[in-house]
Image (cartoon, rainbow, N blue to C red; front, side, top):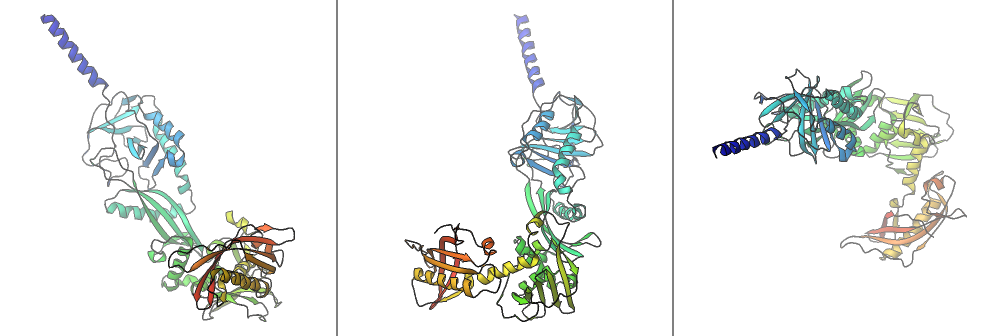
Length: 538
């Protein structure tokens, strides 16, 4: 009986020991306090070490974070966003449940690599250059190597370099890195660990041969607060965006950081950034001098921003009575693809030009047929010849079939032919009748009132109410009515077929449209057009 009791006691002890031997350690982030620590370092309270188990913990992942020691740029990737399931899966297969051997600490440098699933960490390691792995299990720090001797550090860093190349390979990134580092340091002084996730140029504005204005968007990732040091992160890294306005000094190949006044708060479309830059530069005492040598495109937009207008002129100055409009010029776009060559004044042969003139008449930039440009402003009266830059790439291809004059003239023609500029004088109070009368007014304008050579000119124009002539019911208090109509037109010249929406083109050269015209009664006996939609029809 006594022997039987001893046997069962020994059997129970063996079961307990076996259960302890197979228990897996909990994997946690290897950085004890990462709110201020660099990747791969630990806080002053270093956890005690213990012998490595036989294998790393098993885990799953669909994302990865890689933070090499000493690098500002981190890698934050999720397979669902970047289609990296295969690459991330290969790294997971190298580490998840991999046999390991215990080893000593390493001098580094270290790379922190964290695996995520649904943006929550499932495993986190620090990997030294000589392939020592460090991770925590509970309150213990474990140092080990993969038993198969795989170069896990080399594979992780190769993955990092491959997927951060689009940022690092940017032409100006080495110079830009200084300013991005300063911002990251500001975050860290506030107690927020920050790494750069992405950085790209979102606006480029050639000002002169010596300066180019640029805006970069730097996207940072902020380390989330952890419940306790050493635990896996259960929330994703916060994203923080910073727009950085810079002036590229081309001659010295250096960046000049500009004040935030060059940006409009919370407005970062290209048009808004262009307007903000122009507005700030005009009154800036430190950098306003660069306006003295600015490109013609810059002055065109500068004139429009001052409230100036563009009008049609001739080189012999005999035809200056054409109407003037605030013609839009996408100078930041066009300015990338042209260069300016000093030249002599062409002959006074009556060729047309589009002139941009400031409200007070002190500045005037005129682009003539043949792309001759006359720049007139206080202290400057020069002639230039515009030519496409042979080294321009990308969007330049859309410009190669047109001259600069043709682009600007088409913009002018579009403004001159627009129905939005017309005012209908009529005693009617019926939106349908007002719509038909407005079409009659517009048709007459297109046939008789446009400047010579306007590509929107037509030789024929007809219209009718599109049965059943439905008028859309405006919201309560609204004054704009949309009326269904159809109209037909014949362009006056071949160029007109390239600018008018095609609709249904008949064999006789007439273009048929149906759609709506929106009209509004703006005063007693006065109607205006607020828009016309186009569609194919007869």
